[in-house]
Amino acid sequence: MKDRSVVFSPEAGTDLAELYDWIADAASPKVAIGYLERVEAFCKRLSIGSERGHLRSDIRPGLRIIGFERRLTIAFTVGTDRVTILRIFAGGRNWEHLI
Image (cartoon, rainbow, N blue to C red; front, side):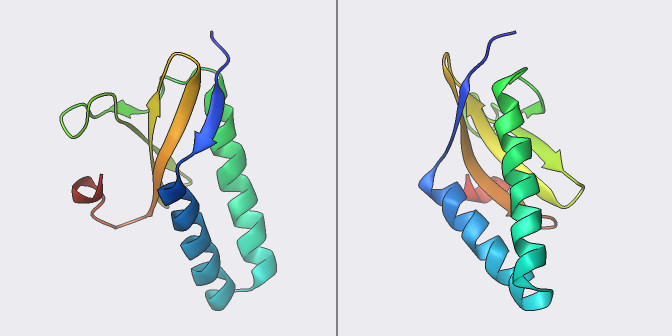
């Protein structure tokens, strides 16, 4: 297995910030930080065995999606040396047209 770096697109960063705001308002900042730490750790583990999830080249060449804790959909691509997290969508959101 190849070890790749994992990078977050600006859009994925915005998705994380919006997710933080929503959770912090609904629960607390402490809960939001804990959840985002788990999301980011999960994404960073895509550095090994990167070609996981479902390949969705029908939407965008090389696009892969994977679920996180049955609540998020993470869209990413795998390159030679890196994994790019493109977007992070909350459950139930129609993400296909946003990619």
